[in-house]
Image (cartoon, rainbow over all chains, first blue to last red):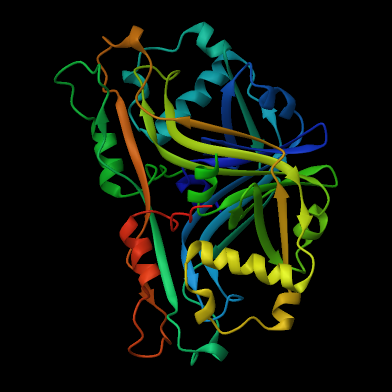
Length: 200
Length: 200
């Protein structure tokens, strides 16, 4: 479950506002059994979600599984759903620490090279988290499971889907001569979507 | 908005059950302004969702955007959120038609080659839909937007993420000699995640 959360570049957060569901895609990060996300302090979603039960789902669509009947068609996928009460990171020091973790979790070593966070930027940023109370993970790999239809003469198999980072592109206004940092090159080389998390 | 719904291989459906949010990844398909999803007739989610307001969100994470400060880090993404009341496809003929659309939407020409759907399979399948009442789409492309920090000496730019179908793999129990159908080869060749939808 942690692996799916760590590898997925984004999650979908489900909120209930005035009795109705909202599903918002957002970047997230994990420290232990705590999952964080953030946004503008002006965000209606974040303000309304605070103190309520939320559901955070991370999913990978890894491919189509084609069987010999419509019924047994399926997908290769990995998904994790976590449940908990949305809480807010309070205090400038704790907020700064959480944002540090967010950046370093994705790009180890980048934080200290950045233009420092300004007080008004910190104020404009709201960080929420859940302590995971309950979670489920599901993984479906492989091929169609329709042995009774194996002699039906239609192609069956899987069409994998891959998702990966590719060559970085310089900002148009990048200072000439600045090289792509090692942590970016390493992420692209890994063929993954995130830097593998550090050991805990 | 239709294009994001059509290209995304899966969606995340948000339900409210007993006041709490649930976000479930599932395959979906669209016909006009109606978005369908399906599952087992035994599914608690589908039974509880029927008649309630749901939120269906499709998202692509297209890359990381790295600015010179933590604050302006961002993502390239496309997302569509649609809202509506979950309704059920009733009647065997309508259910069959909806499943036909699902398969043909992904794999044009496959339906007629399949082992026909059995009555008990149709019974075991519940198909829900929403008529889109309200929707929003968001797209973020490009590079960091932090001109005031352009002289800060740290690399800035984007790390694109690509997601695509790759070479199909035969089922281990495939009848020897059966070729990969044209619609599968075309999907993989397109480098996309779905067959482009037919003109309406």
